[in-house]
Length: 253
Ligand SMILES: Nc1ncnc2c1ncn2[C@@H]1O[C@H](COP(=O)(O)OP(=O)(O)OP(=O)(O)O)[C@@H](O)[C@H]1O
Figure 1 (tube, rainbow, N blue to C red):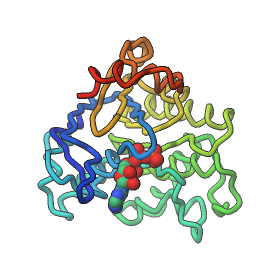
Figure 2 (spheres, protein in one colour):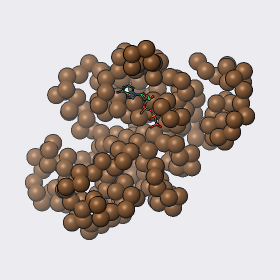
Figure 3 (cartoon, rainbow, N blue to C red):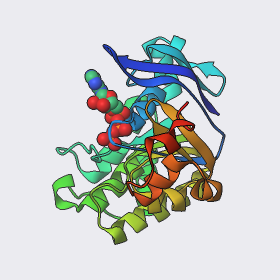
């Protein structure tokens, strides 16, 4: 389980997350929606320890990660895999080396075991036999899939996705969304998917959360979320400028 408790992130006077509370249950996929700059990626960075909150606590499986030293955090981080917004593959390494990277850095696995894991993960993302390709030979969708194979190389129990479908055409986006679902089935992991892609969010998520002006203004099972009467949710889903400030007032906590 992952739990954010009264988490604050601020840059100078600018408060991005204002005492945010959120629980992500074991094995569920939560989609986090929100406008540009709402703080969605910040939530992922906090959980994977690329950033520390100004205040509050973040619990990962009963460990308050805000109190850990970098060495202690490295151990918790082994449970996590992250798919970065721009894939973030190492351009000078082959696909196989990219996927093997974490296993080589953080485990004592034998070369044979590493090669077997790389092969298995590439097959899982639908790109078997691509070990020798270089990143610049791949399409955007393939890069995302390799990035996913790298994220799951160490069988994480938590997978974080930052805009997994951004920059992809609708058909490739659909492929990535289906992959996220199938990862869930194969790895039984807890997943957080930060996205602007409503269709993808509704397809992959058990629950959906909307971040607005420093708070989660709605967190609900996907079908309930779609039917929410919260005008901020409806405005976000339909993208229409049809909600007045007055309507919204009661829903901003
Ligand atoms: N190091 C930093 N210094 C100052 N401001 C920052 C820093 N990092 C992030 N921010 C600001 O924090 C806010 C939240 O950023 P974040 O990347 O979490 O937003 P987001 O919801 O993921 O946005 P997008 O959908 O556009 O990627 C943004 O306004 C951003 O400019």
